Length: 560
Image (tube, rainbow, N blue to C red; front, side, top):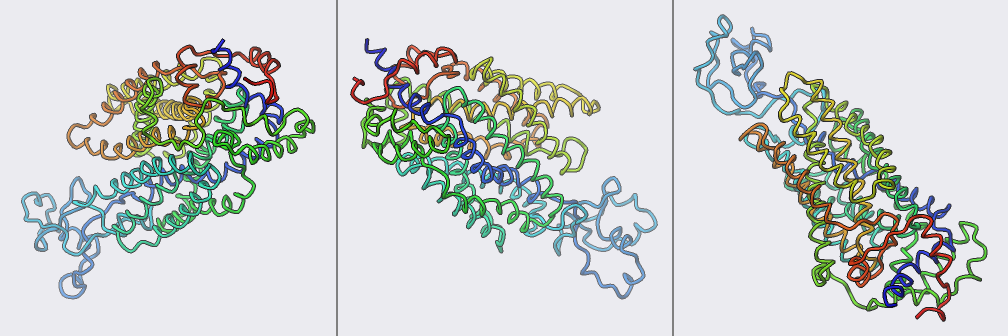
């Protein structure tokens, strides 16, 4: 008897949302309003592929006097006598201690000549990039690692932002914190574009990453919490298309704008429009009800019903009905991340989702931040990597409904790992085959990311959904921040980074099998829903949901 009552309470909000139309013009308008700010997210997350690029370079010899003996030499001859060459190309970090004029006659005898580090800076090839972090702050040679470290610093900011916004969004609401995220992202990002030193740039990129996290988490949660059960997959996959579109646009923006400062400003510009349209974004009715703000929730639900042309909403749903939607939760209780560990089922859920998110993000960024393997220019490589995500998302839409969340999550991760493994054992001369496998692996890694975002949103209860996503995003950004550093291990053993990414993908895919299935299940509202219903999970087909919704009462006086 008790078990039946819990199904009634859990399904209640979905039933009320049905009366307002859980998938109508209101929901479409909401996802479109959130589409624009989400486009800028991949632009910032993968921006380092372009702003941190290191063009070919050699020691600057412009200080050599043009008069005297050097006045009779061409620029190429000056380079020959001043900078040692390797396979016909000037080396990047050394120059001769003294001009070696004999090399004008015999250039093959430069092996044992004394060299020193560059004395007057570097000369960069600006045929591809006019200006990057490397050219601006001389991040080459012994400072080369700082260019990749800027990506790590950004993702550490994202990691901290996941914790920051996870707490505040569950406490103060989704909508208000979304505006904070918009404004802070604009200010910090534009400020970073005008940095006068690398330290200043790194500090504001950290803050930019922190601020952008709010947009990622809140936009996804708002989309899912305003849609009915049977359309959650569509909403999740369609919303994630913004990532792929933004990713492809980044390749175009970077191709047209080759100055790093201007590129940062351009990819941030969509947030100005997002801020202007923030007024039309509703608060989550689920969050309002879970926090006892039923009057405000009723106003938003009534607005949803009106927009969706459900004129009979007020006659079928009364304001007092909302006060009974969450009957077990302790209202007024301020949830923290420690609550994720206090109960057995939620503790296991937290552990497993953390591992899966780390594996998904580590693998995805390990592939995405390495765009030098095709033998193509970086713009085309980046575009190919982005374009493959679109068909991957379309296929994943059908897989999520037919195969389920858990099997899809496991399958995409394990297959991604096998793609990396195939490229590890395939000789480099088979570059066409390696390219095809790499693109396939990129598509699968994106499919795993699309799945885990939707999957995790469905796993955590409403009262702790932002905390849960905050923690999993923290784990994801930890994986993303470590990925650029893992790639530096190729200096130890060339395949080592790929071996690590491969192992992580397969391991996290196996862990995903330990998570409960959520396909066609009602969203959990309270911690008790996790502890009681997840012990004996009940999943509903579309036909079952329709039958249940007809039997559930809509008025407060019939609910026990």
